[in-house]
Length: 69
Image 1: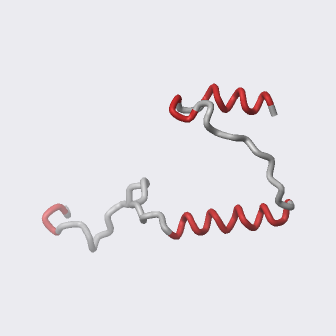
Image 2 (image 1 turned 180 degrees about the vertical axis):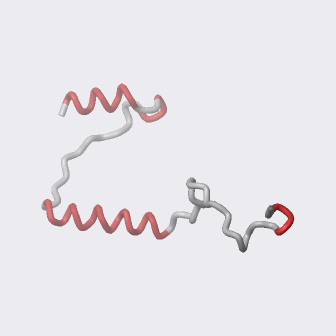
């Protein structure tokens, strides 16, 4: 685990250096998968909904009549 710790310390914000522990999980693989998936779902539930980064083309119903040729 030494290379992992060294890489982590090298790439982390200075405020956290020397303060983070790296531990091996004691969960069974199946339990870890279920807990990881449920954590993602729980996190998504409380995230604010943000507008899509993909622009949406206006439909004829949303285009002002003055701009239609």
